[in-house]
Picture 1 (cartoon, rainbow, N blue to C red):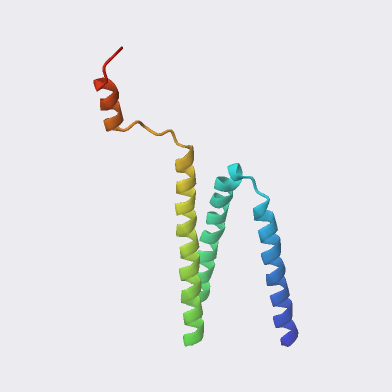
Picture 2 (cartoon, rainbow, N blue to C red):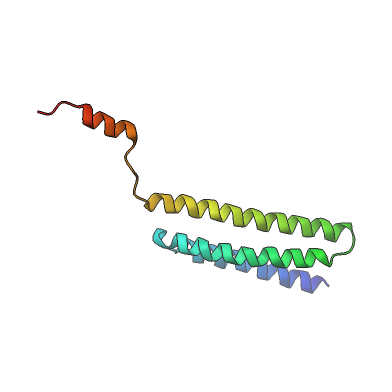
Length: 109
């Protein structure tokens, strides 16, 4: 049993390092498509965690299942918020009403 835990922990630590290296090399123009793909993956994780939660027995398994559903949902919502903010950076801003009125009122020379 100890060998299984050590093996799983090793895979987890290596995946953290590989994930960090891969994400840090992505140019900023590709972050929005990357976030969209990540949101799709987290949607699948929510479905999987709900499926596992439905077949859990005992309070510890139920608590871990609820935490998994909550964290996966938090990742999806956070991903959509970040994606929305990033897309706002690329949108054309409309001039405000006050700035349009000021330019119309200014005397012409």
